[in-house]
Length: 351
Image (tube, rainbow, N blue to C red; front, side):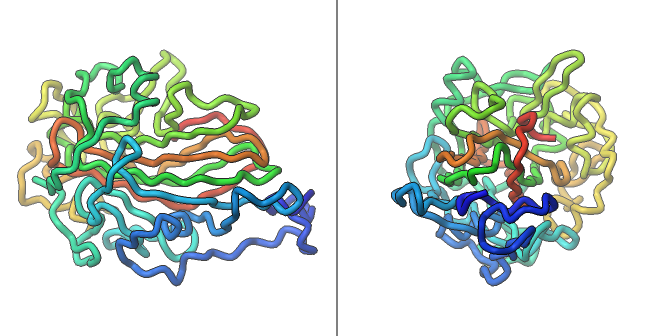
C-alpha cells in the first residue's frame, strides 16, 4: 500500500492510501469531443488511462500515470495523416465504448464509420492512399530477422515499408502494485474476404518496452499475436486469422463464405459471430462484389483482449501501430478501449 499504487477492486484494502477502500476511479473520457484530436493524451483517456504524472517527480511523490504521448509513422518519426485517428462514442450502428463514454480509433484510411465526421467517412474499399510511407518499427523488424511475420501457411507479405502508417506511443509510470495490464481491441479490414492469406497483409502491432517484468513479454515485443500450443503456431492479429481453423474464432464478425478469391490461397470462413455488428460501419457495404456469397467490403475480429507484463513502479512505453502492407489501399482500422491494470502477471498476447 502506497500512493503510487492503483486501487485493486475487491481486495478490501486502501491500496493507494487515499483514505477510501475499493473506490473505483470514474471514467475521464465522457467529455472528449467526437473528433480527430491531435492530442495523444486524449487518446490515452479514451482508452481508459485517466491519470497523468511527471517522470521527474522525486520518489516520495511519484504516482502512476501517463507521462507523455506522441503520434508518428510506424518507425517512430514523421507525421501521420490526420484522418487516420479519431475519438468516438461508438463505431457503426451497434458498437459502443466498453468503459466510459469514448473509444480510440486508428486507421490506414479515414477513422470514421458511415455518417461520422471529423474526419468524415470515406469508403474502406478501394480505400484512401495518403501517400505516407515509413520503415517498419526497426526493433520489431530486426527481432523477426528483417522479415514480416505471417500466419502459418500463408505467403510472406511483400514490401519493404509501411504504407499509410500511424503509431500511438504512450510513456507510462506503472502502478507499484501492477504486474500486468490489458486492453480491448477490435480489428477490421477491407482485405477480407478477397485477400485473406495473401501478400497484402495489413499489420496491427502492440509493442511494449518495459524493464524486465516477473513474466517475460515476447522477444519481438509484439503483444498483438495469438498463440496456439498444439501444434505450436503464432498468428499476427489480422485477416489471416480467418484462414486457419485454430484461429477462425478470433476473426468472426463477417459474412460466412469463400475467402482468398483475389489472392493465392482460397478457403472458407465460417464467421461464427455473423455480420450483425458490421451494420453502419462501412465494412457492411455489399455493392463491390467480394467473394461470391461473402460479399461485404470487409470483416472484423470482435472485441479481443491484449495482455502484457510490466515491472511495478517502473516506466513502460507502449507503441500501438497500424499500416497497409504492399500498397496504400484496401484499408484497415482498429478500435481501442478499456485499459485495466492487474496485480498478477499474465500470459502475454491477444485472445
